[in-house]
Image (cartoon, rainbow, N blue to C red; front, side, top):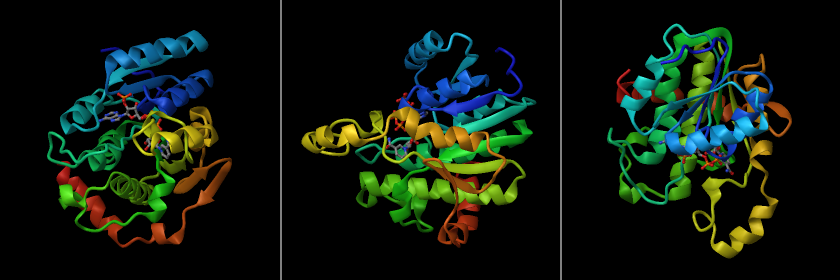
Length: 271
Ligand SMILES: NC(=O)c1ccc[n+]([C@@H]2O[C@H](COP(=O)([O-])OP(=O)(O)OC[C@H]3O[C@@H](n4cnc5c(N)ncnc54)[C@H](OP(=O)(O)O)[C@@H]3O)[C@@H](O)[C@H]2O)c1
């Protein structure tokens, strides 16, 4: 195992649309990047593509499956004593059907919320004092509902977009709670609607709507730009969107479920 370069920034889902754009942008700014990816083969070709455009990039590939608590624990263990500059929780999923992970959690909630929660908390001692943590949320969280039964939902409660939105709301509440509990900079970024693998043909919209709609979506580099600003920002508990750093609306800041979710998710992830 190679030494982790001090000042490295971890990007999860670095092989995806916005993850690749984030890794490229950070590397071009001179940050060493840890590309945390589920599929090492796909990630290797993305790494090569970035190196062809940014030859001076310092990129280190590591395997991470956010649907597996064991994978998360093995990944985090490699960072003992590291002085990381940042963590970009970018990986995300919106599966069309209900399924459970090996740990018995619904896939969307596991990958978009419980996994990043566990990863971030396991890494907390591995950051430099001025490090930034950025969680990629979604505008869908604004319309989401969440309750104490987050981890109890069965196949009949599953709806692709609603479950996704709830997972992103949970990630928002975690970000806020974490920002209250740590001196690190913890922020959220909202990419808007981005032309990426996630909104690929037939997965979200029907093909005709997709063909008409996609040209109006942002490019991945545009979608991830607020997250790059957030990573380098001295602010905390803010929402980065387009070119702005915004206060988080009070209804999220004061959500009475945040404390409960913090404790319950710790229990469910074995912390
Ligand atoms: N696209 C949008 O309009 C939009 C809007 C708001 C928020 N977002 C959020 O932006 C983030 C990036 O999404 P994107 O649009 O760039 O989509 P994407 O191209 O589908 O990228 C998603 C990334 O997450 C990774 N991933 C999925 N499941 C994983 C798992 N179990 N363990 C580790 N990594 C996993 C994927 O890995 P593989 O490469 O192996 O598939 C991929 O690298 C997500 O959090 C998404 O929810 C997207």
